[in-house]
Length: 160
Image 1 (cartoon, rainbow, N blue to C red):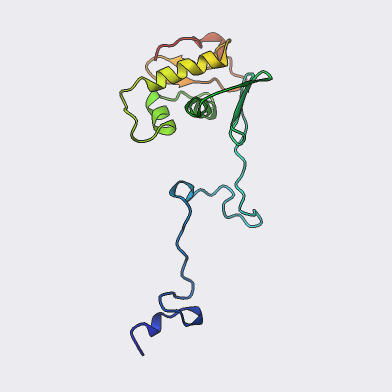
Image 2 (cartoon, one colour):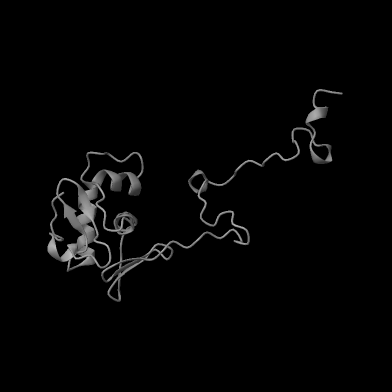
C-alpha cells in the first residue's frame, strides 16, 4: 500500500477522504450566522430583518429605507447605520464608542467627533419632534415604541 493509497476518497481521488467538508468560500462576514442560512427547505434565503418602528419613524433594513410619517428620509450609509443600531436597541442607551465600533470600521479614530456630528445631521434630517435622545455621559437612545421617555427628556439636545 502506497503512502497516499489510504487517503483516497470517492472515485479514487487522492487528497480527499470520505465525509471531508469542502472549504467555506463565503465571505468572512457571512460565516456563522444561523438565520436562515442552512435551514431545511429555506432555499438558501436569509430571514428578512424586522422593520424597526419608533413613533412615526419606520426603518426597513431589508429595503434600506427610512420614512417619517409617510415621507421618505434620505440618509447616508452611516446615518442609516446609526439610526438602525439605536432603533434596534429597543430604548437602551448606546454609547458613542459602540456606535463607532458597529457602524464604522476598525480603523476609525476613537477620539473623533464623527458620531456626534453624524447624530446631529441625522436629527436635522429626521426633523421635529426629536427622535434621538442624548443621555449625558452615556450615549444616545431612541425610546422604544410606547415609551413615555421621549416626551419627558431632552430629545433635541446635542450634548454628548
